[in-house]
Every structure is written in structure tokens, then in C-alpha cells.
Amino acid sequence: MDACRRLLPDLNYSSKNSPLKVGLTGEAAKALKASPTLIAAGGEGDEFQVIHTQLAGANLLRTVERAVITALLPAHPYTLFIFSNADHSRWHFVNVKVARKEKSDENRDTRLRRLFRRISISVDDRLRTATERIAMLDLAAIQPELFGLSALPIQQRHDDAFDVEAVTSEFFKEYRRVFEAVEGAIKGLRGAENRRLYTQRLFNRLMFIAFIQKKGWLKFPGMAENEYLEALWKDYREKKKGDDPNFYRDRLSHLFFRGLNTPNDVNIVGANTGKVVGKPSFLAGLIGDVPYLNGGLFEKSDDGTDDDSSIVVPDKAIDAVINELFARFNFTVSESTPLDVEVAVDPEMLGKVFEELVTGRHESGSYYTPKPIVSFMCREALKGYLETKFPGERKDAIAAFVDEHTAVGLRDGEAVLDALRKVKVCDPACGSGA
Image: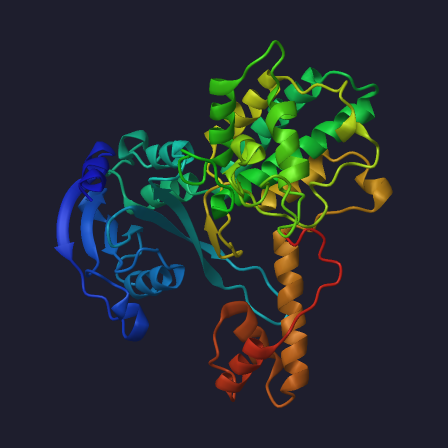
């Protein structure tokens, strides 16, 4: 907490210490360790405020954060909300942007909606993205108006700093640059299309690992939490031997095709358990403890290139991926919605990369559906389901319930909510599931 209090004056906000009352009840009230506190302010008349709330648990629950913000926002419309867990080891900086909702049909008015956007900080996260974004909040960088600095330009500055699209665009720009450098560095492949396809598979596999290591599923001795690839690369560089060491051949090929592609009940010299009876596993010493990942991503390709020893991925190419691309950005596997997002690289980036760089997707009929379209399709499907199940409910009331999460117009809101809890949904063509 001391670090946070030092940060805000460095960004030219004046320090405050005023406890606030928040009218929460039930589970949300129990989740608070301390009442929200106004800890800083900025602009003329201290119109823009910074409010900190400490939660009682080890994790930061978005439902509780939204409840606190919803309760405080009417009296504090221009605010940066900061949340920390019980021991201050995890932090969320939350920006609430007010945006106009598009018309869902010609008979309904446009309405304002709140977009919750958060920057996550913990001892385990890469902080470059967070640092760059938070640095944008410096009041000294905002041009004052004729009568001083009002809350509106400060709020606009915060809205810009929490723009996840800007982070996504920056990552994709770097992704393309590193992708093309690696594509040009790989040796032993003939033809531009073969080179592109091989590089795509390599990046797909490495990107997938970059996300799942955030889940804590990949373990390697001495690694920092959720930094498996970095630990594997570091161990290789410290122990590499021989005249021609190669990270892809000596480590990644074993990880891809023996570790992650080996069912858990089939133990190839300890590939999945990291142990064999009576002695350490040689393979576990190379790749650590990894699970079996079904789905085909780590199966060897049908074109034979994964078995072709004449194809060489130089160490400098892997170094570029790990240290020039992955190390620069924070990855998240948290579930985002159109109205609640984390300012980080999320799994939807896999879809953007797919759309922009994948060769031959038109010929194969492979397409990625953007999240807003998926969200719209899901909402429309839920409306149709509820309209069929509850013919006595008004269609506009069901639409408001699904789109805006308000049950005011429903005759029996509890019954409708219970139906959503029990419904089973099957998407037989979900692709990657992203």
C-alpha cells in the first residue's frame, strides 16, 4: 500500500486519506476487509478522485469490484478505482468508461453503458504493459484548460490509458515483426508457403504455451511462477553442451511431441510425471512436469516437416520470440466480456493472428469469429430460448434482461434466472473455443 501511495504523488495527484461509506449488503459487504478510502485527487477542486478498496480474500473478485464501483460511482463520477487483496500482493486498477450502447433494434433507444477495464498487477506478472499504461495517467502530461485542469480531460486521459485495443495493436505489430524475422531465419525449408506454414505452427504452439503457463499447468525446477518458457530457455542456455546445441531440437521438440502430446496414462520415461522408479527422468530434466494436451496442436504435421532433421530453427529465433515479444507483454487467461476486460494480451489475440497471418484459410474454409459477434449470437440465442420457454413474458423485457442485466420488466425474474442456470448449450462447430 505504501508503494501505491508513493506512486500517485509521482503522477502529480495530491494525497488524501478519507474513508467513504458504501451501501453494500450480503456477500459483497463481507468481501471487504476495509471500507473504501479516497487516497488521492487531481484537477481543479479535486474533482477527479482515486479510491482504494481492500478486499478480504486472496483473490480479487470482479463481482465484488463491480458492486463497490456501482455503489460509489453516482457520487464519484470521475474516479480511478484501485483494489487490492488481503495482503496487498494483487492489485486491480479499474477504469470505468461510459459509452453509448448501439441500438439493438429500431424500436429501442440508445442507452449509456459502463465498460469496466482493469490493469492487473501482481508479483508474478510482467509489468511492462502496466507500467507504460499507468505512466500515461500523469497529470503533468495533460494540457490545462483556460481555467485550470478539469475532471473531463483527466477522465479522457484515463480512458485512453486503459484502451485494450491500443495494447492489442501494439502486440500485433510486434508479433508481425518477430514472426517475419523468425520466418526468414529458419533454415532447410523450400518455398515461401512451406516456410510460412512451418512458422505459423511454431508460433501457434509457442503462443498457446504462453497462455497456458499462466494457468500454472507447466512446471520446471526453479522457475518463477507462471514463467515456464523463460525457465526452460534459461536452463538450456546454462547447460547447453556440444558443438551444435539447439533449443528447438534439444528442448522444444521433446516438449511438443513427447510431453504435451503424451496421454497422462502413458509415461514415456516420466514425460508426464517427472519421475520414474529409482532414478530421475532424463526427459523431465529437459522439459519439467507437463500435462497431456489433447486437440491436435502438438501432433506432428502430416507434411513430415516436424520429423525433418534438416530443418533448423536457430536459437536467435527463439530468443526473439521469448525476449523481444513475450517478455514485453502481460498475458491473461481471465474471462473477459464485452463490458468487462483486462488491459492485457488475451486469448482472442490467437484469433486476430489467425485472421491476419494464416495462409490458406480461405481455401480451407477456416475463419475466426470476433468476440463481439460471438457475444451478439449468444445473446440472441438466449433471447430465443427464453421467449420460447416463457411465452407470457414480454419480448422487450427478456431483451433488456439479457442485454442490460435488468429484470425490472419481467413478471417472474427468478424463474427466468433459474432457467438460465439450468440450460445446456452445445456448439458443434466451436473451433478453438476462443
